[in-house]
Length: 316
Image (cartoon, rainbow, N blue to C red; front, side, top):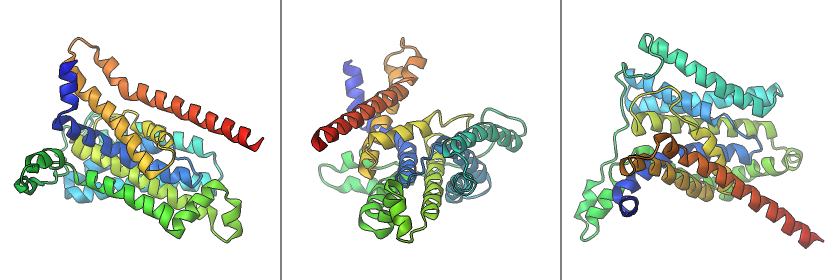
């Protein structure tokens, strides 16, 4: 137990948490934008998975930043497909999302086999590139805290810094800009903005495209920094965990950040625990993030029901 506590308090564990949180946070922010517009994006898992494979394949033939943009674009395209079927063709958005997830699970394996010449498990035969870490070693010259800052802040992916900036940017967009008010209004009561001349379906379509783009960006981080390469079903439920993080974060950007950090911390714990508890079953340790997700959703449901009861008492 002392070893576990020492590991959790170390700078190495902090770095691991940031690494595991980044793809989850990007997907969570994407899910938040779609959810606030009234278009629940349950296809985050499939969009992340397609973003992973697209980034890996493109990185073989192009610079890493082009591959990252390709992963983002792949997620955005799936978001557009979701918008067309759900908003234009009036299909059930939940069924469309699950269809994309199923298509991504099988389609990525087929595309991987085509790209690698038959390998359906990993992209080990592809010379894919990685996102270079951001070097902040110059902070070491700061007296006293320089070495600590370097150990905590240096070596992260550029997408980790972008994800942190996006939390502020999305908050500013939602609560300080008229377009953010439109988006929230469309999600809360679409009849009012529609009466004011705001195109409800267009707002929801763009929110799904942006949501898919952020999920694809999270997939690029996962396949080009957390791991270097693609493996079958490598997202491992992170898209569904992101949906839970949206609800646990009370549908707010800062809440989404805190929820993603919570899930990222438990995923990081699942990474370091096998080295500390060799006798513990690996499958049991890998269950930790998903058990936390279920408990978090139960907590959210309890809070929501209690809030409804309090409103009922006040109105009475």
